Amino acid sequence: MRRGVYRSRQVVRRQLLVAAVVVLAAAGIWFGMSGRSLLGSSPTTTTAPPPTSTTTTVPPTNTTTTTPVGPPATIGAYQVATAQLTLVENPGPTQRPLPTTIWYPETGGARPLLVFSQGFWTAVATYDPLITDWASAGFVVAAPTYPHTNPPPHEGTPSTPTGTNIKAGEDIVHHPADLRFVIQSVLSTAGQAGNALTGRIDPSEVGLVGHSDGGDVSLAVAADSAQRTASVKAVAVLSGAELVNFFGGTYFTPSLPAVPLLAVQSRTDTVSFPSCSVQLYDGAPQPKWYLQLDGVSHLAGYMTAPTRTVVARVTTRFFDAELAHQASAMATVSSVADTAVSTISNGPQAPAQPGPPDCDATP
Image (cartoon, rainbow, N blue to C red; front, side):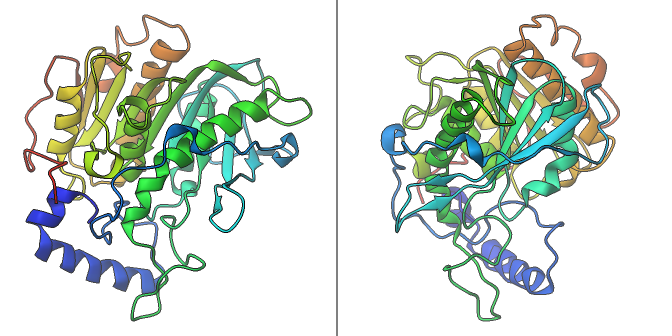
C-alpha cells in the first residue's frame, strides 16, 4: 500500500493484497479493482516537483472531432460530446504522456471546468457514467490518464513473476505536477482558436474531483501548501486522504485561501479507511460538506445506483454553488443527499468513522 501508516501497521495485510492483485491482473479482471495503489513501497522522494516545473504548451490541433457520448446521463439535460487531447509533459527522455479525454455540453458558452483524477489501476472509462452526468449538468470535464498507474501493462515498467507489467505506487509523487500541467494545457487549448474546446471553458472557474489516489492528488493541488495552484476554486474528494509524506507541505494552511471541500466516503469501504476522509474533512476550514455512503465498496459507490446518482447530484450541486454562481444550490442539498444509502453534514467535524486515527503518519 502506498500510505505510510498502512506500511507501518498493515504489512501482512499488504502482502496478502499484493498477491491478490497479481492474480486478478493475470486474469485480466480490471473493472473490479479497488482503485488504490496497493503495490507501492515507501517513496524514495517525498517532495514532488515545484509548481513551475512543467511549462510545455499543448497546440490546439490536439483536439479531435467531437463524438457522441454514452451511456445517457441521469441528472442533466445537456447533450454531451467528447474530445481528446494528446498531452506530453516534459518532452524528452523523462516525458510523461497524459492523454486526456474531455466531456462537454454540446450547446452553450463558456462553462466551469472540472478536472477528474482516476483511482489507482482504474481506467478513466470506468467512470464514464459519473463524468457524463457532470457534463450533462453543464460542466466541461477533463480526465487525464496518469502514466504507470493506469491498468497495466505499462511500457518500460517492471513485471511481476507471472509476467504482469506493473508500476510501484510511488509514481503518485509526480501526479500533482501532472495535474497542474493538465489544468494549464486544457485552459490554454480552450483559449486558442480552431479546436473543439475554443470558447467553451471559463478559466476563472476551475474545480477538481478525484477518486481514491485521484482524490489524494486533487486534494493536494487544491489545499497542500507545496502543491496548490491558485486557479482551483473547489475540490471534491471521493474516498481520498492527505498524503503529507508523498507531497510535502501542509494541508489547509491558514495563510492560504480556503478552498470549499466536499468529502465523499463509504462507511463500509475496506480499501480507503473512512477515518482518512474524516481526518481531511476535520482539518479543512468552512465551507465544507461530508457525504457519507452506506453499504457500498470502495469503487461500487461511484459506479452503481442508487449511490452513484446521489454522488452525481450532490457533487453537481456543490460545484454549481462554488463554480457556477448558484449560491443556493447547497441550501437544500439534503433533499438529494439524505436517503436510505447516504447522509450529508456540514458541521466542523465529520461523523465518527472506522479506521486508524492518523492516515499520513511517517513510515
